[in-house]
Amino acid sequence: MTAESPHFPERTTESGIVLPPEPGILRVATYNIHKGVQGLGPTRRLEIHNLGHAVEQLDADIVCLQEVRKMNRKEAAYFDRWPEVGQAEFLAPEGYESVYRTNAFTKDGEHGNALLTRWPVKGSGHLDISDHRFEQRGLLHVEVEVRGRSVHAIVVHLGLIPGSRVRQIHALQQFIEHEVPPGAPLVVAGDFNDWGNHIKRMLASFGLYEFEGEDLKALTYPSRLPLAQLDHVYVRGLTPTGLMVPQGRIWWRMSDHLPLIAEFHL
Image 1: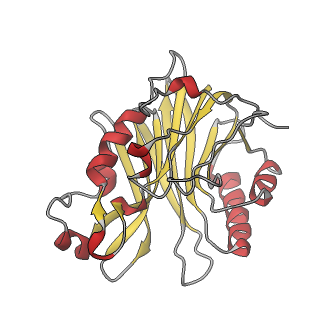
Image 2: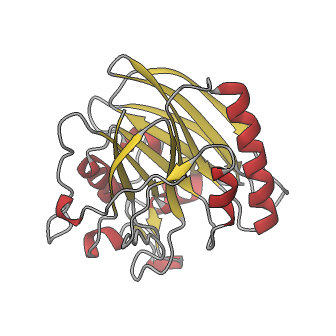
């Protein structure tokens, strides 16, 4: 079984501006923000302020973010306009709640996954799914009340090694079985780091499907010249209505990934 949905390029303007969702639609976005900084060395630039405008422009009910910094002493000393609060809180548009959990600790700070939502948060949790000491990874689970109904969202950022991703999907499956009621709407979104279809088949084996269409190409990486879809929104108990990837220079300058936006009826 595959949830089919057409691409909706008419939901963005020629300049890359994302149009608001239709009435009655739940919009979910996933975005790897590359820790709010682009480039390397002395030429690197701070993009977190532009990302703040971008997240607001997505106009999503739920925004799933990866590579979000809670703090970083080195970058805070380097950039004059480094935010005084964590990036999750900084990126949350007015009226949104932010939930953040750390995946990785470094000598200069920590970073992880975050979820932003305009709907009330009922609860949250975190699972460490690190497979080896060189890659610290985690799942962020947030229960959100949308129009009186509980929707469970899990933000993921899987490892770079194929074997690690397989074991992390097994951990995800066990987590869902223990933490998410069988009949509850569920979204699993994030950066899956999978260049093939193996993870997709694994997720389908326990009832999670992504939106597909005959001519659908939702390429998100690398942002400047997208060759692959590393970012996905998998769902259970939801009806898809559309899928889109914002394009254009204003988007590829901010991160090495493009955001992915999925729309569906509850």
